[in-house]
Image (cartoon, rainbow, N blue to C red; front, side, top):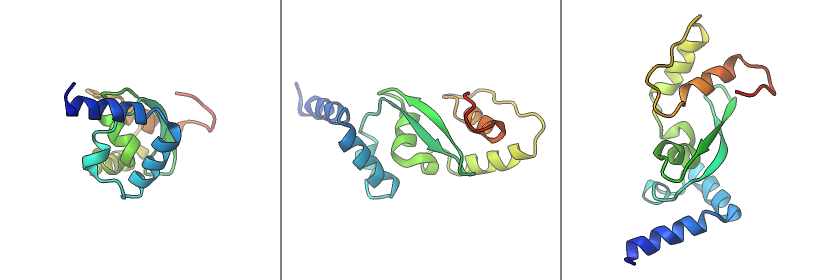
Length: 122
């Protein structure tokens, strides 16, 4: 087993410890964990993603999910940060929104959360 494989194995095992994972997540969301680290830490979890309007939706990430990894460690700051605020602003006044070609179903749950009642599930 190479050093690279050993490092990946260690990272996977370490991220199973919820206390360590949550502590690193708080550091990362605050901007204290560099991308060179968080981009290599696997995430296999269901977690809330905060939207520009303060609401949130649950995202289910798998170990190799690049979008899930970015959303978990940095929130919407690092995933289409220029597009998402514009999308939500435009969607608020739209009568119909088509979510076509979505890679990982990111826009639709967030859009849906704008129009649902608290406690509804999507």
